[in-house]
Length: 70
Image 1 (cartoon, rainbow, N blue to C red):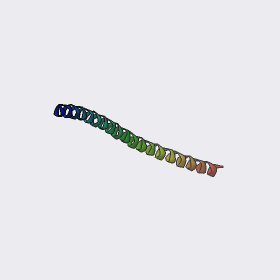
Image 2: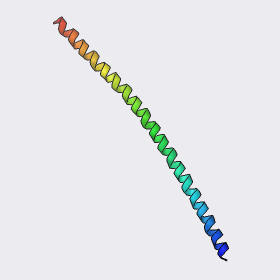
Image 3: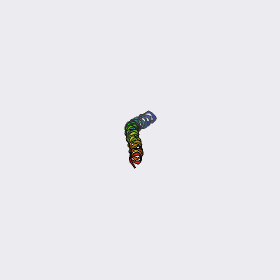
Image 4: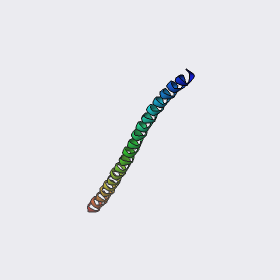
């Protein structure tokens, strides 16, 4: 009787442990995906920042060139 009860509890524990492991792995994959997206956005943001800086520098250069003509 006790052995049977222990076997039932063991089976339930194994099923719960498997479920939690699966859920943990799923969340881990989601975290990795989110981190990869974040890195991609940081790179993209850096590229846009460089373009903006270059644009501002060109604008200043044009303003200086314009002032020379006055």
